[in-house]
Image 1 (cartoon, helix red, strand yellow):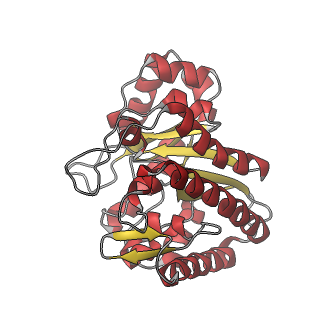
Image 2 (cartoon, one colour):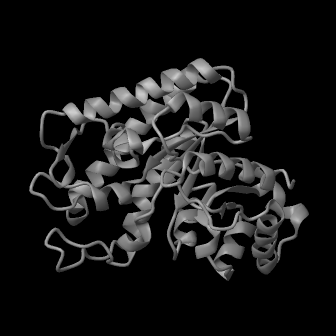
Length: 321
């Protein structure tokens, strides 16, 4: 097994966490530090990648297609500064390197149109956002390949809102209703825009859904090579077994993402991973090369001490120590 982090970490020192990631994990990731502000958090960082669309902050949050683009430029600049620092530390890195971004459905459920409604409400706007994100990701991958020419790039698409999008669970602007269900063919089409771009760039597309009811069959069909999930929220089922048997790798969030009352041992966590795989009918020897372990979700809400310990614990679980 290998080990990685989901993405977010506490504090404001990017270089510190970049050193932890590059030095302590066999699948390092580009850290996200939302404590530095909304421009550095998942949504702002991902909107910075849009190509041909501008996003700005309004009192209610991010809106696309309004404002001067100042906040968009700030988010772009911060991401570039972080990558400059990471390049300085790890330009010769030869193993996998993971970059995260929010997916089109989480962005559509979070960002707003000029009139104050979620992008999710408008079919054309949903499509435009997904296409803009895919085009921007293609350019971003080119930049990453120039910065880290020896790395094997992995792109993690974060879709925590996807289950609610598929189940009419996103509230409308008034708060009194819910947006209509997005049907699987449209969900698949927008996700596939990203997986196609990632594969065309020679990188590996992975999706992370930090929620219950992960739509594993939909995600596998959309072209992802692996699905990351919170093991505590995910009971084993035939859908997971069928997807794994068909080639979908499993990235299991098994380490607590906030400071626990009692710190679990690596042997306990290894047992949870093995129990899940065993209930799917797969043995350790078959499964290990296709399993990645991580904290259950992002570490932004953890103390810095626990965040470090959680990543170290994930590395121990991955190495079966």
